[in-house]
Amino acid sequence: MNTSESKAAGIAVQTLPEINAGTITREPLAGSEKVYVQSENMPEVRVPMRKINLTDGTDITIYDTSGAYTDTSVDIDVHKGLETVRSWIESDGDSELYQGRDTKPEDNGIEDEGKAFQFYNPHLQRQPRRAKKGKNVSQMHYARKGIITPEMEFVALRENHRKWNLWPCVKTKSAASWKQNLIPLSVLNA
Image (tube, rainbow, N blue to C red):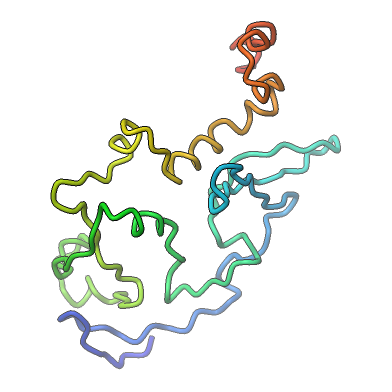
């Protein structure tokens, strides 16, 4: 590691090391491909899924938690971090940026300041955001107001993905077809 240092927010910052591209997993996982379930209601919401090829020639699609690193179309710079995914919260007018406190060694679980900040990266520091006076920015608050946030849409798509495949009647949203086509839990849990 290069030992040249600079001062940022009162913290001694070491120059960041070069990262060998071969040490970061950037390739698709073998026997599968990353796909996305696109929201019909919010074009900016895409849920990552992994389509896994099975040995019998079929496939199964599951929620993919590998993040942007296994999406070869995403430009990754580990020194700058990932793009923000909550840009909608900036435009709703209910929150504001504020000056947060300086990082302390205890925040990293270490008492020695030299060790606590050895990997500090000023590019990865984001300014904190809070609700404006008299406002509330919780998911529960928005749900009670009947507002569906992108996070809610994401979770709904993620959690209901398999139901769409198992229950074709869900797409029709017909109560009668629901009753006719209910699958016993014993079958789903088998």
